[in-house]
Image (cartoon, rainbow, N blue to C red; front, top):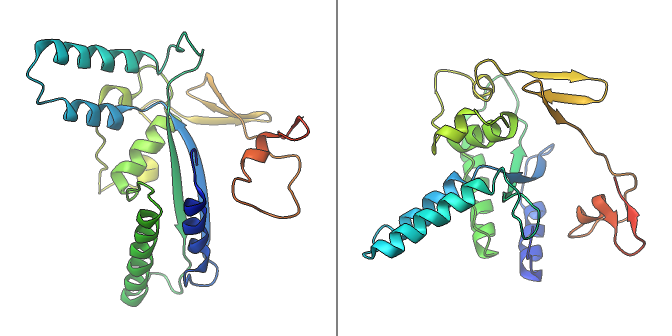
Length: 220
C-alpha cells in the first residue's frame, strides 16, 4: 500500500486478531488497473457545476489526456497511467452443502468489523460487489483495444449467469503453454515467484519480492 503510515499498519494487523473461523484464508491482491472509468467519473461529477465554459473545456481536455495515457506512455516519465488498487478477499469454510443462517449472520458481523477497522485506519474501502468484481476481472483478462469494458463506463453482472462465465468477452479465451498464459492469443501472462523469503515477516514485505534494496539483488 503506497504511502502507508504506522497507524495503517496497526489497523491491518488487527485483521488477524479478529475471531475468524478455523481455516479462514485472507488474500491480498495489488493491481495496477488500466480501467480509469471510476476515477474519471468522480472527476467529472465534481466539475458538473462549473459555470465557466473555459473550465468545462479544460476538464474535458484533462479527461481526454488521462484516457490516452492508459495506452500511450506519459512522455515525462515513460510510464502508462494506472489505478492502483488493493483487494482483500476472504475464504471462510463452512460445514454442509450450504451455509446456515447463523453462519451468514456471523460472516456479516465479521465483514462489518473489517469495514470499521479499515475506516479507522483512514483507508478508503468499498465492498467487492458482483458488479465491481466483474469489472475488475474484465479489465484484467480482456486487455485488447476492443474490450467491452473500454466501451462502457459501468458493468452490471447478470444474476442468472455465473460470474466466472461473464469475465471473458465473446470470442476471447485463456490459453496456456509451458511458459505461461496467453490472453486473446497475443497478450502474455506470466507468474513471477520470489527467489527467497525472509525468516520473519514484516509490514511491507511484498516490496522485497521485487528486490533486496539493501544489497541490490533482484528478487524475481
